[in-house]
Length: 109
Image 1 (cartoon, one colour):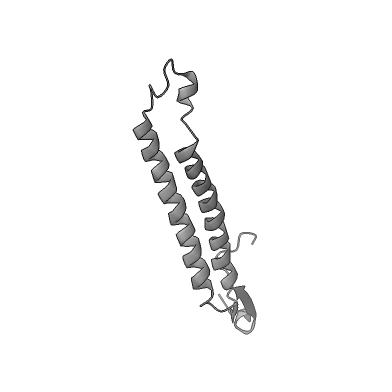
Image 2 (cartoon, rainbow, N blue to C red):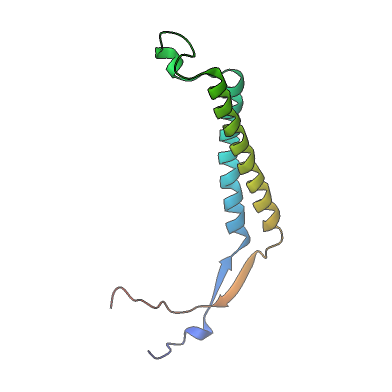
């Protein structure tokens, strides 16, 4: 396949923004999970308690607290990943310029 002059064209790729998008995603998800975990630890109870003949019959309180502890750790891990991605984004350049390359597959020819 002959070269169609693609080597002279440049494209700009935003690098720092990709890491920031990941950071925002992890921070929103981590905050939501962390908030639900705190609610479950102190005020929440399983939905099975509403329909059980006796409270804590299907899901014991120890099982529920273990689940809420997992949620808490998961939320904190997501927040930690968000912080790490945000910190790493400061080390990346804002944009990079690279030569544009033609795709290997052309769907419409």
